[in-house]
Image (cartoon, rainbow, N blue to C red; front, side):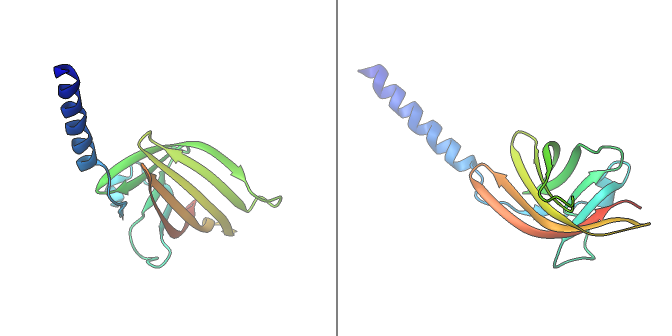
Length: 142
C-alpha cells in the first residue's frame, strides 16, 4: 500500500513538471544573415513583411537542411520528403523535421529567371500538438 501511494505521488509530481515544460505556443522568429552558414541558397520571409530577415532558410550547398527559429531556438531541420503536387511541376509539398519540430512547407513557383526561382507558400510549424501557419514568399538562386 505504501508503494502505491508513493508511486501516485511520484506520477503526480512528474505530470506537473511535464505540464510546466510543455510548449504553450509557437513563435516563429527571424534568422540573422550571420546565422545562416555559407549564406542562403533559398530564403523566405513572412509574406506581409517582404523586406524583413528570413524566417526559413536553406543554406547554400545544403539542399536537405533548413533553418528556422521557433520560440527563440534555431532548429536545424532535415528534409523528410518532397513531392510535386501538379503535373506542371510548379506546386510542391515538403516535410522537414529535427525530431522535436515538424514543418510542412507548401509552395508554388511564381517566376523563374536569371536571378533564380521565386515562390510563395505556407509554412506550418508543429511543436508537440501546437500548430502555427504563416504565409511566406522568397525563392532560391542568385
